Length: 146
Image (cartoon, rainbow, N blue to C red; front, side):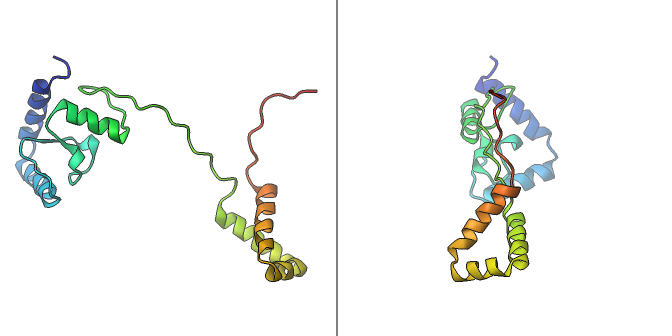
C-alpha cells in the first residue's frame, strides 16, 4: 500500500497529534489567517510555509501535484525527481565592476570623457569594450586544431 491515501493520512495524522498543542494551534491559526481551510488537511513543511495553501494537503495526489508544480525533488511516500535544468550563463561582468572601470577610464582620459558627453551612445560602446577586455571569457572547446 506504499503511496496510499490511507497510509498517508495515518502518518500525517500521527504527526499532527504528536505535535505540541500550542504549536499546532499557532500553525493552524496562521494558516486560517491566510484564508486556508485546515480541516481534514495536513501541513507538510517541505512544500511551503504555514501560510502557503499548497503546503496543506489531504491526499497523496495533492502532495504529488504540489511537488511537481513546484519542481521539488521528493523521496518517500511521494517520489519525484524534477528534470534537470541548465544553469543560466553568468554575466561576463557585474554591472558595478563594469561601471567602476568605465568611470576610471573616463577620469584618466578627458578626450574620451568629452566624446561620451557629446554622444551618449559612446558610453554603451565603452561599457562593451570594458567587458570584452576585463570580463569573463567564454569557454573554449578543447580542440586545438593545427
